[in-house]
Length: 478
Image (cartoon, rainbow, N blue to C red):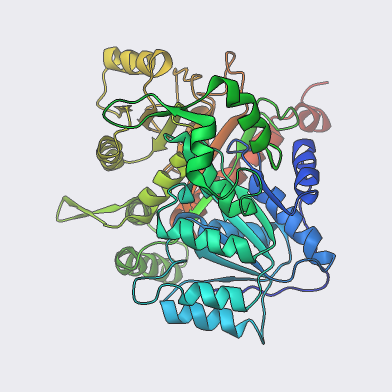
């Protein structure tokens, strides 16, 4: 479990965009509300801003954030980056989680972060963790990716609904509140406001607003005469903005997502990392560059889910980065097109197999792709309903126009700033009419985080040097 310390009064360290300020004002007017804005517009910062304001006013003392496993670490990083609130990650054994919550009665932290799946407990422990949370009087509940409780019969939905009835302040977040089964919205709102908006009876709400047009299997669609009322009720306590509506957003938005490596990965990773450090310490700077880069490459491969042993790839299962990718993609609407860049050919195989098993339509391109197929794949992605474009970053950095997407996920990357800048520009081109979102997937304190930070610094230096004002100061031109 990780606990961060706080100093002084509660503050929010970051400036908000205008659309974030408007949404924050909306949420401050409601004791229970939802933010259904698109990914990339800063919903988490809005939630943390409300939390900081209520904490500073003394209206909130203890907050519970419930989220997918793969974004727990991101919430901790965001709390540290944007606020001075203390937080505790509720991880480890079931007993440890309960002990940590009860310990807060004497030694409280401001925020506790846990996953949806750990909330209900198992059959022999069901209700014990919920009991501990209720008895310690949490007063603010943030539910990230609230669509994870859309199945009203699931234990996680029942658990969060119960907590929602006990915790007064609530804020739910999701970029896709309406999924395959639109009637699931009633389960989410029941947990959010106790049934005030749509009532507590799921079947009554479903039959009022939807009709079944399926034959063998139910297929619920909104009744035309009830659509306006349904929308008005939804947005009576919810707000939503799209990237296109956020005129104050920069043209490119970067939002890193974090994870921890698995124990198995750590067993392979640590000896190699220690070897690199030892080599640097004993060679007095006279290191063999290529040999060191090869070892660094192995660290990146491990974090991506594989390593070569005896010239054969060994795959890590589970692979935290693949799990993170899956959760990130679920944040977007089903028709959202997404580009996934990676560095290694083996990653192309891993991602292709993953896409196939998850029934995502995709095209994949690496160094072996000929010019004819390359053009075909680009055309398919641009002009059909293909969802994913999986591409080696070195292959896909030039001569591609992929403006049917406004989102790039960096599964991995190298140290070169040329491929970094050029690859990001594949969606940021003349025909693009949306703000472009870039999502590097990074391991906390891992090599991929170091590579991203290194490349980002190089890009800032390059941009500063080529800035006209900088060049004028050097008198290179008038």
